[in-house]
Each structure stands twice: as structure tokens, then as C-alpha cells.
Length: 144
Length: 92
Image (tube, rainbow over all chains, first blue to last red; front, side):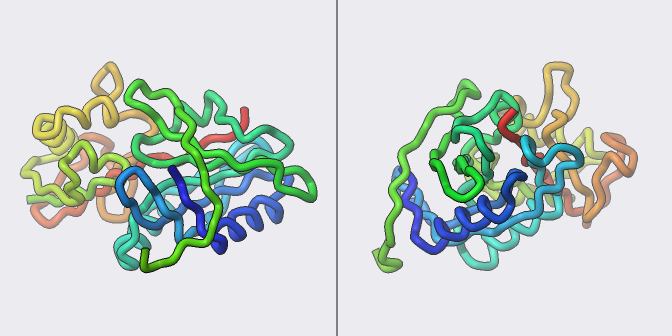
């Protein structure tokens, strides 16, 4: 299960709305406690896809390396990738699945012109298929 | 020995080890040794023909091996190699 703190949630929503009608993308970080992943920080990343950014995103390798470094330096767990689906449900496409990495959570934000239409998260299973994971949106006490 | 930095999503296949030291002459040797030591990594790094998957980037220092000598890129003792998963997707 994902628990998303208010600040990173607002930042992801803001990125999705500002990037509309293009897809936004970025990374998120936090900690793992058993089966729970608590998201405390995000890094917004430029969508480096050459071509139609309204239905595709790509993250440059140097941005990925920066994200690993950010996690190390801030003693955070690197938990996954978020991106938006403008005017489209928060369901992963075959293109999302083929490019997905194990372990990471993949948050998809469905966005229309002026509003967030939905947020869902997915993770690859051992058969390289996506399984949905539940999301709880709330403020988490850092000392918990 | 060269140092290979394992990306977070693949560390569950390396006993949560982030850095692995390997002695090899080139990238192909590094990948062979790495997948020999951690067999579960193989399907995530290599395609069915045994080549590095298109969604996996390998960097020597700050340079993509596609801009060097690909899998024949030579390795020195002090070389730092990063495995960088390609992050991409989209709604269609």
C-alpha cells in the first residue's frame, strides 16, 4: 500500500496540471515499513521524449542518476516513478508495462484541462504484469 | 576491480547490494560475471539473444557505452559502471 503525504501529492498534482496537455513525469521517495510505502518527497523531471509528449514520456539517464544520488544523499528509499495521462484513465498502457522496472511503484495521474480526474498506482509482478496497489492520501507523522 | 552500481529496482536480485566489484576486461565480461554471480538479474539485463536489453543503459563514468565501444568497451581497475534503467511510458 502507498501512503502519500499531502505535500508530495500536491506537487504531483501541480505538475500534472501545469504540464497539461503534455504528460508530466518524475520520481518519488520515502520509506518502506513492511508492505507500506510512505511517500515523503518527489523530484519533478523534464519529459525528454522527442515527439508527441501528449501521450508519451521519457526520462533522460542523467535525470535517473540524479534521482539515485538524491535518495542516497537524503537517506530516502527510491520508491518509483509517476506520470500523467492527459484526458485518459489512470490505467497503464502496454507501452507502460514493457518499459516498467521491477520493484518500483508506478503512479499514474489522470488529468483533464482543469482538474485531476484520478490517481492509481501499479507494480510489476514476477510475471512482468501490472498489479494495482492501493493508495491512501493523508498526512503522516514523520516520527511514526 | 571495477565497481558496478546497481540501480534500486534491481537490488532485490543482488541481495540488496548497491555496489558490486568485478574483475573483467570489458563490459561484456562484467555483465557475464554479474549475471553468473546473481542469476536472477539475467532476465532483467539481457534479452533472449543474450544482448543487453534495449531498456537497459550502461554507463562507464558519465558516458553511455553506445557512444563508446558498446559491449567491447574496455574496463580498468578504477572504472565505475552504472546500470541505468530506461524510464519511459505513456498512455498509448
